[in-house]
Length: 399
Length: 98
Ligand SMILES: Cc1ncc(COP(=O)(O)O)c(C=O)c1O
Image (cartoon, protein in one colour):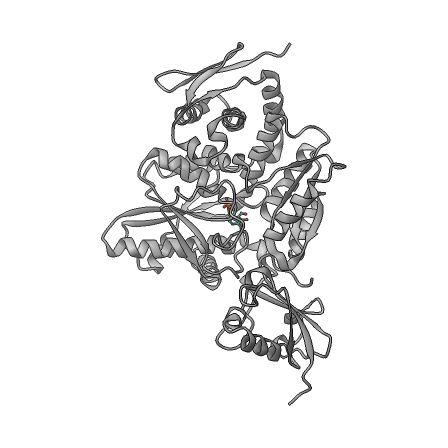
């Protein structure tokens, strides 16, 4: 006989009990999240995540469809779920080394870069160092969240193969977690992927299918959609572009970490747009806490070389993207992003990739704009991945 | 003038708005540079996406001749002959060959 869990949220917004009972709870999403975060002192971060995924992923809830609804604080009915499933997932995941080392990344202030840009001391630029995650990028959070949610919802059973389209980092994260959790992984990657990327995926034992290099990341999406219709294969299509668990990762981890690390002083959040999960999730969390301006960063041109990013006007728009959430979307040229990544390495000694460069270029512009208005600011830019992932590309070409 | 060769050029999706949606076009030229010049004449605006002010291929662009990156050959001076295939790909994830 499975036991059931009741999550009960009282008026003082505290998560009080996870007890065996057959029940349906009525709760407010934003309050439930606050409560879960407060409960952090007596449960590990992972356990907290496992529970929050349930809150956000039970089908039939309005917040399942739109990132907007799960951050808007409306009431929802949560359905039942099985305690033994939760316990199994939580203990398997908690005992897995790589899982334990995902998240809780440093936030560093870029004093030297601020001075180099000529910004006054009232303008702070901070960088969230995501390349210290075990898979080397912010996408470890996404992949973990998607896998947790899928196992919890019963969409990913033992023996099933996880499949997705990815230009790189998410694929590396799936491959890493697949190895550690014994989940077979198949990735559809544009054929133009670099040698180091191909070898990294092979090192983790993932199966890789290459899509037409001339079709880019949208070509990989189209190919994976064809592959999953093949009924001979038992695939779980992770679908990071349309899977709400992607944004949830940032709502429950990236956002709260930054909020704590800035002691709630955050005024501007700058995140590059790929699947848009980072901006939707962390941005959604901040929207709830105070007046934080949310800035999305995309390549200025359709033809660009900023790994992981999408030029939204010409690309397949991710299903998790809610255009009403960002306060603005800044365009950054590839060359400008490369120059900013190079400046970061030379001025601060942080070796990051081109999308981090794009975020910093946008943060620098914003800083100057606010300084000219005499406005103070605490800007946080996302440091999506590290520079060594791009050694064979033009980003670090010697000249 | 060098022999004008018929060179197939493969166009990536984000540049097809210049080529009326064509994924493959035929251009004349005895070197990669000449083919890129022809491309610009046929489809004004495409050239500056591919090359910087000094005429070099932009850092984030990879140009392949029969699958080999021209950076490993003679860059824009790489010579071409009839039937060669030139591919253009943004160097999103690097890539030394296709
Ligand atoms: C290097 C890099 N930067 C930025 C992003 C964008 O993050 P998101 O998908 O959360 O929008 C990605 C995601 O694919 C990435 O790989």
